[in-house]
Amino acid sequence: MVYIEREIEKTLQFAWQYFPVITLTGPRQSGKTTLLRHLFPEAEAYSLKDIQVRDFALNDPVAFLGQSDKPLFIDEIQKAPGLIEYIQGIVDNHPERKFLLSGSSQFEVMKGVSESLAGRSGVFELLPMSFAETSGIFSQKDLDTILFDGFYPAVCSGKNISTLYYPSYVKTYLEKDVRDLLNIKDMMQFLRFMKLCAARIGSIFNASELSGEVGVDSKTIASWLSVLQSSYIIYLLPPYYENISKRLIKSPKLYFCDPGLACYLLDIESPRQLARDKMRGNIFENFVVMEAVKHRVNSGKDGGVFFYRDSNKNEVDLILKEEGEITALEVKSSQTYSTSFADALNKLPGWIKTPVCRRAVVYAGDFENSAGDIEIVNYKHLEL
Image 1 (cartoon, rainbow, N blue to C red):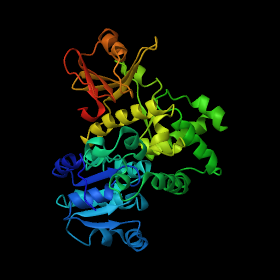
Image 2 (tube, helix red, strand yellow):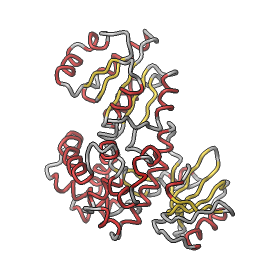
Image 3 (cartoon, rainbow, N blue to C red):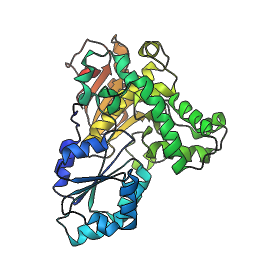
Image 4 (spheres, rainbow, N blue to C red):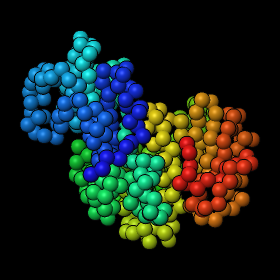
């Protein structure tokens, strides 16, 4: 298999100069192991999926961690979280020692890192591949196929196909991650919850509304939602408010970390079906939103991606804030440009006080124009 370079590589290599420990989290099968093995070939790698390796690590952590002076790469660290405290002692007493940690469960990994490795570990996330990373592979694919196939490395590399990959992914997720994190007796009820979330892509999240449809209370919905977040199934996009205290109490928009997974949960069985599905525009918006999120995450930056909506229901799909300035994007799946696409962007400077340095309509058509105050950009040429 040909290795596909990841945008986060430079970020990790830079951080490796300053931190004794690098922790990489992310969804299952997003390429964490492949990336770290490729980027740090000098590290001795051990996977705690291996029962014998895990038994050694659990029963004699000092010997396990001290078996080499080379950098140590420990995969699936959440399976032996007690190792993190021993790693803390090692790096405190031997600053020259280096460790690479990876794990799929954000809750479990981050709890140990935050408690024991605060200030000692650079913590990063690896999401499914970005469009830029796969542009060479996708050069012959039409938009509907790109969205339907999604961005997990196994599908992008041709190792698997989307119609087989996503059913297996969801089944594994339900049987492992969900059972580990939640005491759910009815897994079909949780799957229904996931499907109902997929039907709300690009919508304001409403726990009460979902609780009525799923048949559980709002607290359960909130708990289930946190699991979908921590296991990188969904992404909640916060609203942009210049008053931070207001931002914290407003509802986010719901998106999925991968459009291919969303298509599967929406029972979309082919790119042809997607082309005429009522959710196509939402899935395209999901794709562009996650491209912005991936760009920030791959740069090692937290947050900075929002949507705008005020009490008068004026709305802009994407607000990107960096160095005190805003880039505003309106997202449309149409192949034909309409001047109405830019209506909200034209009015945005009157709605907020923060300087707006760039405004653009991102759509699926061929006509592009960088002249004037508002850019018109095909999604393939969007630079963030």
